Length: 66
Image (tube, rainbow, N blue to C red):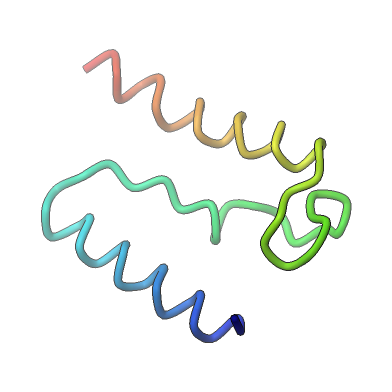
C-alpha cells in the first residue's frame, strides 16, 4: 500500500470524524517521521509505540475529563 492511498484514507477518516463531531487523534500527522519509531512504513518499533501511547494519552485524557 502506497503513501498516497494511506493519505487518502486518513483524509476521509478526518473528514467523517469532523462531520460527526468525533474525537480525532491523527497519528499520521503527529508521529515524527524518524526511522527510530518504525520498523517499516506502517509498523511501529518499541520506541514508536511508546510515542503513539503518549500522543493518544495527550488527546484522550482531557477528552475524558469533559
